[in-house]
Image 1 (cartoon, one colour):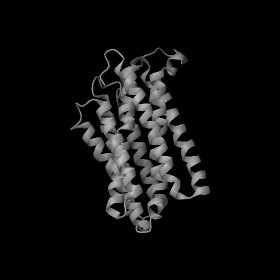
Image 2: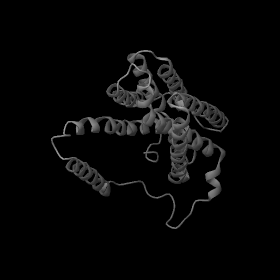
Image 3: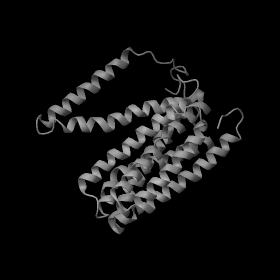
Image 4: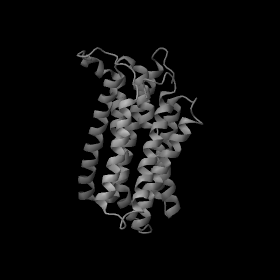
Length: 268
């Protein structure tokens, strides 16, 4: 998607993200209708078969030619560009926030006392709806807006969402916070991966792989230590962890923005 998009790399990646969100939101709802009527192993087998069939389709899809001859290696020094490192560690914390919200939100909002377990689970679907909705807006209404402007908007939405989750005293306010937090994390990967493709076109695949390695490390490490922290101090300390990650994201994106702004011929 990055290589075949001459322009609007971020919005096009948002379109791709919409399908990811629809699958994450819709598939559990569809499968839940068959639980108790069809054996779970049968359901998993059907899902696996569908994935295999869609995978086979890619055998017949023409992809852009390789940018490097077989056996050619990318110089490691090019992966330690300050811009690429800033993007990587932004996604380090972005991935962490996404994982923390997904894994711990139901426990946190359930601890408020006025939200049942079933409502808390519905809240995760509301969060995913926020991701889908904002990615749709980014790919359509905001298609011609600069990607940095979209990401600033999303960071504001993420902050507003977490504040509502933190201080909301009704189901509606907490659900509004979950929706806004979903919208807030929606642009991180599409925008940042679009920036990687735009600023590192000759090594885009390698650079994106490098970024994903850093992002997944953040997902695993911070989520793991969050679990230890909550186990020792209680679920009420979940929000300070998220606020800390958000502060790191804001600082890293500010530095990324100014590095892009000072780079010749880069639209920010």
